Length: 291
Image 1 (cartoon, rainbow, N blue to C red):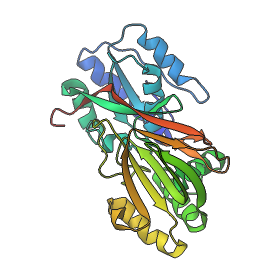
Image 2: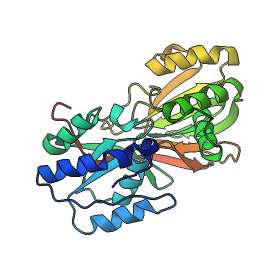
Image 3: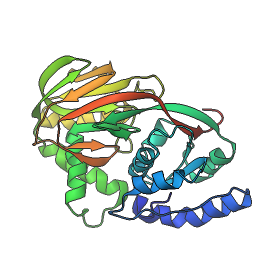
Image 4: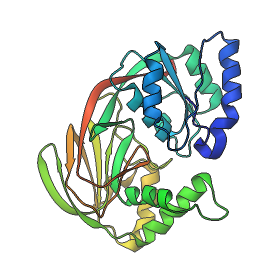
């Protein structure tokens, strides 16, 4: 499954090299490309009904999200990943290799690992969902053109810094395993993985196979302190900030709020309400033998 647009065209550039590798190693395969506006999940489901044993995803976190939602409850299929997106957060929590050479080696010599998946309003996610500041960044990326002379991760960081300087915390009502909260929130992330936005370690203690969701709540931070806090997020050292709280949970509920955006695996999901749960041991992934 190839998303040719992932990583500003990186997916399209490497597909020939990947197919050559598959042929050289006598792996029987069939390629298909996703297109903008296409129901990629339905295509994955149809292809897997044709008795394929493995799915190789060439794309970013959003492409992988489409793939796992196409797989659904088909737990016999093993997912392989070649990351060509902008953030590539999945590979920071699941050791499939950090570059093309390692990921091709994993495809050939890796071992199966069963991981958990989250589910938000019946849509599966591999890494996490977020509302508030990070949801607004994704909404901004979808609704506006990229900045002139900036692309890839540079364009993303530009938006982070611009929105960070002006974003106003909004009141949010939510519950974590039944305990209710109403707070002014800069960010609320419910995670299966550790890293978001390509390098922000929001939930450093998250594990993809522990049967739990990790929640990071960041309350109001004064604008002039936000940039210092951002540097701590990048290193996963924000746990000591008084505005930050962490939780382990099985269920998170977010009440209706038309003023706030939610993202799912870096793709825009919409506005609350949302019900978020964990699906234990839901997906087989091929990882490096040392993982």
